[in-house]
Amino acid sequence: MITDNIFSGLKVVDLASFVAGPGAAVILSDFGADVIKVEPPKGEMWRMANKAPPQPLSKDAYQWHLNNRNKRGLALNLKSPDAGKILERLVKWADVLIVNTPHAARKRLKLEYDDIAQWNSRLIYANLTGYGEKGPDADLPGFDVTAYWSRSGLLSLTRWQSTHLAVRGHRRQPNCCWDVCRDCYWLVSTRTHRQRLLRYDVAISRRCVVG
Image (cartoon, rainbow, N blue to C red; front, side, top):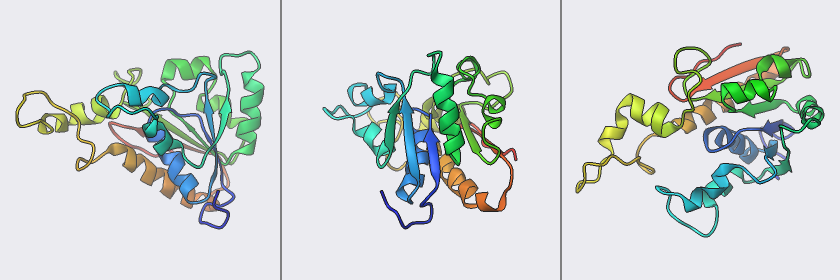
């Protein structure tokens, strides 16, 4: 771990899965933050992305490693009766908490803002969703391919010349998860000027900051 960088000493708990949330956390770790990645005992589903199309197949879970390098790991069953005690210790330790659990599950697991805020008055609570906190689509699961590429119409532009099937671009097409990473970077950069807990809600389909 880098010990002399812009975010050296910053403590981050990464409860997110897949790409956007862990991607934001890994950029913080690249700049010196101490990040603890929390996963279920069997690991998160993104560890198996190397075996599922349209991702390039590989023996190694390279997609997971790209988004989780530099991090320490912790296996925690959030459904366990004692998980709350461990979660409380993590939140009290952390400067930043990153979550992207769907609304219904977040409520059952007591990961909502009001559940967490009581434990750390200066925590940055960064919450990522597909379609925001409110509205008719708020409870829908959302990934970049549905919430961003499809809803925006960009997916229709990423076609092979020989087929009518749309495929998501990986290299030259913009990816909204980097917007999330940029915003999280900016938010942590301004944290030293704040004296109270900050809630940061990010939707893949649209982004907003609530202070």
